[in-house]
Image (cartoon, rainbow, N blue to C red; front, side, top):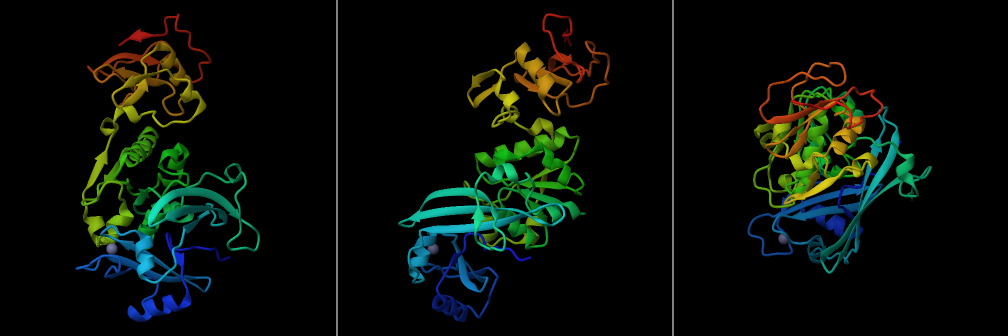
Length: 373
Ligand SMILES: [Zn+2]
């Protein structure tokens, strides 16, 4: 079965403009060309241009490294002002069957992007471009992009932010994936789909959301016992840019693979991101205290009990690190003992340690279950 797979950010163009661009650029179809940008005084070739077609309909995608807006470029190419750009990505289940489609819709006005929105839809029967967007979230599985290939991967798996970035790596022969609902919605269950990788390499966007994404993923991997997680820092990125922009700047896949990887461990992760951005009902009940960076979990007995009873991977063991005022999972596993007792792992930084059996129904703070480490 064939699915509608528009090149991300591409727009449909009239046949005459399509033919003219093809003849200007040696009939090169379906590969990113580096050409002079028509929208500014371009001394070097700053424009990435993709000429393509989908279902027999001509399309192009453009990107100016010097910063011209797409609408400025369209105008110079003789296109009428498009007001909407749509990109579609199909998600497939583990067995390769179609699951759902993610739509990215961007609205432009006078050359400026006014809004960006996402939707998840299920394609209607026998249709390439008619979707049902009603209550689709409940009907679809929360799965990783490019799942069938990810499950088969025997080498490294790259985690990026967004399908557009994943596609850049996939078409260069790498295994890449992303979370459907964005970096803030990393589901700890995704680890099951990637834990067989040779290495897990995270390439976050160059912004605050990127840091949050990096930390969420790293944390969930490290919590599941995955010891080596890597971060790839892309040199030369401006704020908010990503791997897609990095390739548009002329960097190559060989350069990407030659970049040094920074290995991540729990201690590298900023404490304030341990729980921030979480939306699970039990996490909302935690008492927070304000800090300069935002807020963090208060070191209260109620919070300890609440985390011990609810956190999917911290159930059982954690400690408070008084040096940084942070609640952490103990880095080295401690032997399981009877509820109420615990082994000392010898860390000077940890002032209070609590251990509770994960099947224990209630923690009563008034009992002697708490021991000063
Ligand atoms: Zn330009």
